Length: 79
Image (cartoon, rainbow, N blue to C red; front, side, top):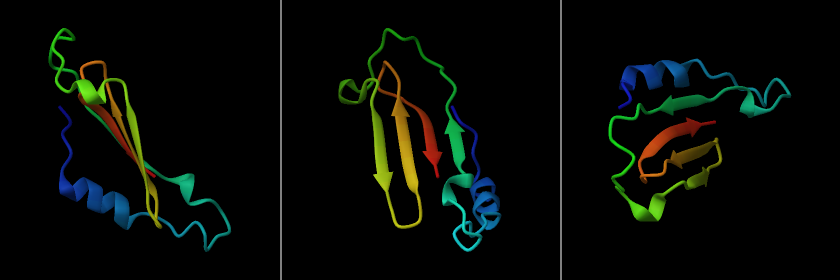
């Protein structure tokens, strides 16, 4: 289980710099949310998502969602 509060994400977003204005890559900063494992590996939660990574792109950044061997989310990376 991850313990993330909206205020944590708001603080992160408020602190982002406009790296492009500085002539640098916006990939200088990212937010990674990792989830603690709390169930036994023998239970498959979502067979379609086993060991997959989903990549989403937008104009302002990218999101990577990673799944484990049981199909549960193990991390979300926002760049």
